[in-house]
Image 1: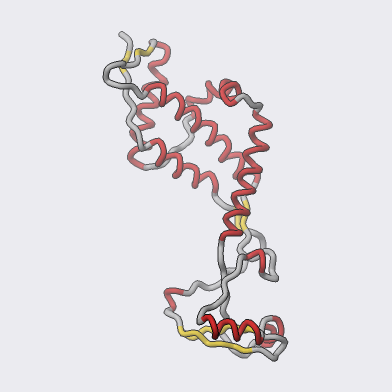
Image 2: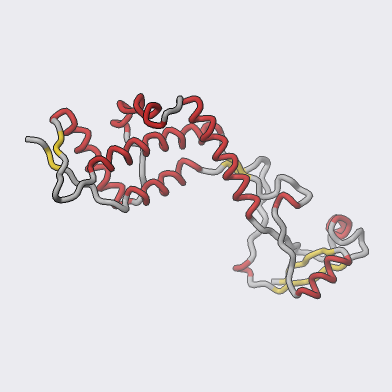
Length: 214
C-alpha cells in the first residue's frame, strides 16, 4: 500500500539525509487536540472509590498474611469479613481482576485516619495525579501521519511548503498502518477498568492464610 507524506524543502532534505521520517509529540502538531484523551469526573469518582476500597482490602489482607510459626487468631466478629475476603481473593487470583468489595464499606471511615488526610483533599490529589498522568502519557507518544493521495491541495498548502515542497511515497504493509479516527470530542479513558486489572494483578501475587479462633 502506497501512502504519501507532504514535506517542505528542509524537512524533505532531512528525511533523505537521515533515511528516516520524523516523529513528533502530539503537542507539537498544529491540531492541539491530536491524540488527546482525558478521564471524566464520573470515571475519576468510580476509580477513586475503587482505589480506597483496594487500599482497605490490601492492608487488611496484609494483616492476615502470616508465617507458619505465628498464625493469626481471629475473633468471632471478624469471621464473616475474613471469609468474604478469602472468597474474594480466590476470584481475584483466578480472574486477575479486582472488583469493588461492598462489605469493606464499613471500614471507610478509618481510611482517612490511616492516610492522615481528609477525603476532599485525597480526591483533589487523586484527580490532579490522574490529569498529570494523562498528560505525561500523551507527551511521551511519538506520532507521524501519512495521506492516501499525493494530490491534496490542503496538504500541499499546509505541509508541502506552500506548494513548493515535496511529497514522498512510502510502500507499507497494510497491517502496519492504522487509519486516523476523527472524533467530535476527546476520548474518555476507562480508568476504572484499568485499575481493576492493575489491582487484581497486585493482589494475586500473594497468598492469604489465617486461622480462626475457636
